[in-house]
Amino acid sequence: MSSNDYLDSFPKDTTEAWRMRVERELKGKSYEDFLVWKSTEGFEIEAWQNTRPECLPDLIPNTTPWKIVECVSSTDAKKANLLALNALNTGAEAIWFEKSFLGAAAQVASQGIDQKIAPIFIRGGNIIDTFHTLLKTGERTEFKQKETEFYLDGNKLRERGAAVIDELALLIAQAIELGKETHFVSAPLFFSGVGNAFLTEIAKLRALRWLWKSILISEGKEPQNASVLAKNLTITYAQNDEHTNILRATSAAMASVIGGATFIMIDPWDRNWKEGNPFSARISRNIQNLLKDEARMDKNLNPADGSYFIEHLTIELARTAWKKVQEIERTGGFSAFAENGGLNALLEQSKKKQLDAYQNNASVLLGVNKFTPATPLKEPEIKRSHYALLPDAMNIPTHLQNQHA
Image (cartoon, rainbow, N blue to C red; front, side, top):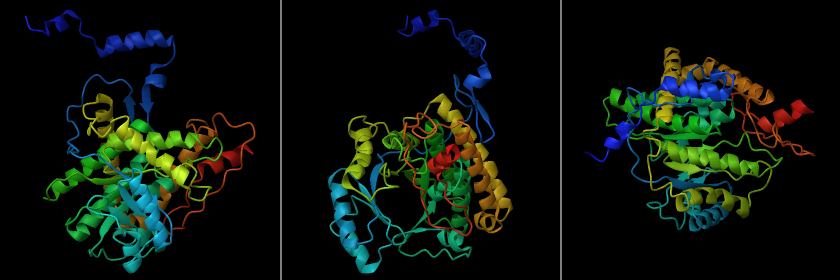
């Protein structure tokens, strides 16, 4: 008798039997309302899964933990260097400079940093937003490969209304256009915005990695894992009950880790209304330090593999996003889609849907439309750079507060 024979003594459970028990527990409430997730993206998936998909997402396993990225916004190169060094000495493992330091200024900002250990990203310097000029001015530029790396900015699109599948489709469409122009010589960095829909964001990052690998294979290139910099979305940051923003940031960080991001950057919870300060920066940095040193999430590098629900969700997101990619390709690709107004219309429609969901309490924002303080503070309206081919950025807390006024 083998040691596993005892398992045969238990009756095999079935989906039908489980559902009957659940419906009995619901006491007349609708199974579909409580246990079937009806996505705003147009598909449905049951919350309980007991079988794996027939065809699993074929991901390249991660072999190294993610790196903790510190965003340095100072425009002074010497001050930026001091902030970067301090961050690296207190837990950060890579630096993202928001200021486009060039030449001597770039050398000053990165002085004393061993870039073999701690990578440095200088936005507009050694790493360039591929479609920035197009979206900013409406004019195309050539993809000139110099001593720089290209990145594709999904976070910017999320700030202006893109839903999860919109961002996924748009990033892949951008990657295809960039790849065709550069003959897929080098892989871009995917800069993805991560919100609070925990399981969906996990599946989105996995779907992004899967689709990018599939594209490389179809182009006859060596398959490789997508390089992803995941950043938490701050459009839901609220000044009212401001420390709930730490919960939102933590959820985004965990989703990024489980989804397999290469780099993760968490913005301080109060950055939208306060000058940068060491305390809030340290707390936000320590979210990731805790995930590594306390939760030990850097020891299991592929924790979502084999989860029936996440595997099914990854497939649904990839399939739905790919349909949108094909629609974009039929218009001539991402640049043509943006130029003919398709991108702006897509984002405006998605933005309205998201704001309506918050307004109708279908989506919850703690401290703003749920558990509002007795004497709420006036939420600051965040002004972000204007783009000719994109709608204005969302201000979700401000929108909700104005609606309640």
